[in-house]
Length: 290
Image (tube, rainbow, N blue to C red; front, side, top):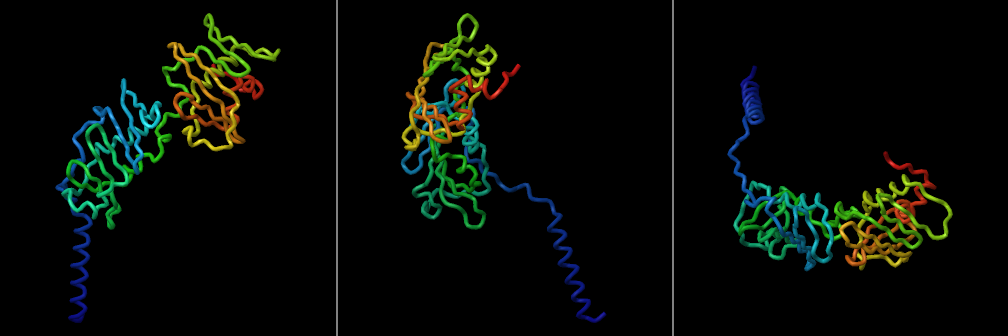
């Protein structure tokens, strides 16, 4: 073997050994983690999202979240939980809160307030694609998934369930029928119909209302001109309160607008029409559940 061949072999063995060492060496456990917050998710009572001067505000009452601005509504608890996860985040990098323009934090596109705690979301680091976040007089780098949890539309935070668990209906008044719970039995009064509905079908119709979840939530001011008013619904509740809904419809969907709240629940046309008419359950041969 020539001198150059031996030299090349030694170099190859050295490089290969170094590569094996680097690959199999224990990872350092001394990488410092910087928590963004010391607050607990369970203690948060108020939440605000500010995006381009548009504000969404929520408040927790009796362990449930409610929207209070720009509309009043039950909040989607799952999406609130995703937002609050930012309190559990640790970052590998922490920087002084200075030179804000460099981090895109001089005018953050999105600002999040959890009680008195502030999070400003800025630009992205070019090498890691992590996002700069300002909080507690520091700048941290975190995954962009936390800003993606912040909705751009308030309708994305409204609970899609048509009736809350504590909104127990005892009477429905629609254009052509009245359904009322009397003496432990649901009774139906229908105008211009000689066909009777059995109690099982009526119970199943009530269950549809109690379980109905909208495909989409739409604010009243965002409704398209293709929606036509088809009537109204008045629902009396067990607690003495009342829900007033306006029925709107277009070619593809039925929308039930909460008159006093300013937003509506949108359903596919077939599902919406079943809510409006229990006779459609019978004609579609939908059997009540046992």
